[in-house]
Amino acid sequence: MGLFRGGRGSGRHWPGRKPEPADEPIDPARPELSDTDLHAQVEDLILRELGGTPLLDDVPTPLSVARIIAWFEEHEFSYFLDNDGDLGGLWRGRLFYFFLFGEDSEILQIRGQWNREAAIERLEVVLEACNEWNADRIWPKAYVRVRDNGMVHVISEVATDLEDGVTDAQLGQLLNCGLSTGNMLFDAIDELFPDPAAAAP
Image (cartoon, rainbow, N blue to C red; front, side, top):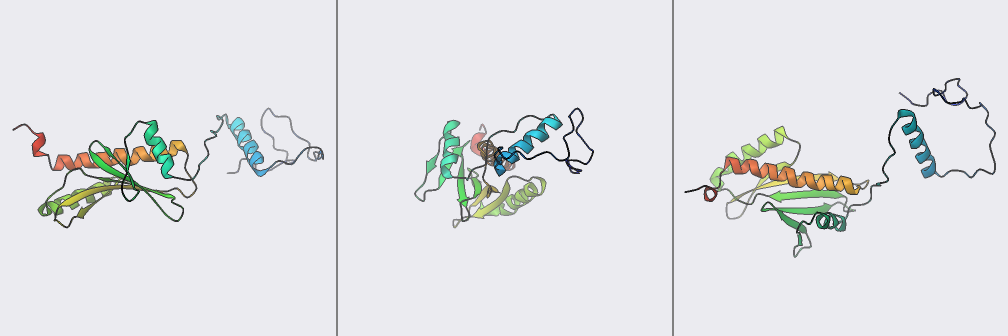
C-alpha cells in the first residue's frame, strides 16, 4: 500500500493540510536538493504524518577489529591478540574469539569454546545435545571438534554478514548475542556433564 498514491493534483490531500496548487511554479533561485537531503525530507514528512519520532543519526559503517576492541574497552572487558593476530577473550572462564571473514572483512564470527572437554566415549551424547540445541534455537550454532588426543570440545558460533555496515548499537547487540548465547549453550552442557570437582565430596 503506497503512502503517496495519487500524487499532486489528484484531488487527494492529507487531513488538515492546505492543498497545494496542481501547477506550482518552479523557483529558479531555489537550489536543487541532493539525494541525501531529499531522502531526509521524505523521512521527516512520513514521520510527521504518522506521528513518529525522528530517526537516529547512527549510520552503519564498515566492521573492523578496532571497533570491536573499542566496545570491549567501553565495557571494561579484558581481551588479547594472539600470535596469529586473532582477537579473543575469556568470558565466565570460556574462551571466545572474534573473527572477520570475507573479501572486505565484512563477516563477523563469534566463536566460543567450552572450558572443559569430554572423552571420546561421550561423543554420541554430546552430538545429540548439540543437535537438539540447533533444532530448538537460532543462536548459537553448536558443534563439536575431536582433537588429536581423542578429547571432544564443544564449540558455539554466531556469524553475521555485515556487508552494508553496522552501527555501534547493532555491533554491541551482535557481540552480546554471541557471548550470552554461547554461555547459555555451555551452561546446558555443564548441566549434562556436571563437573565433579565443583561438587562437595
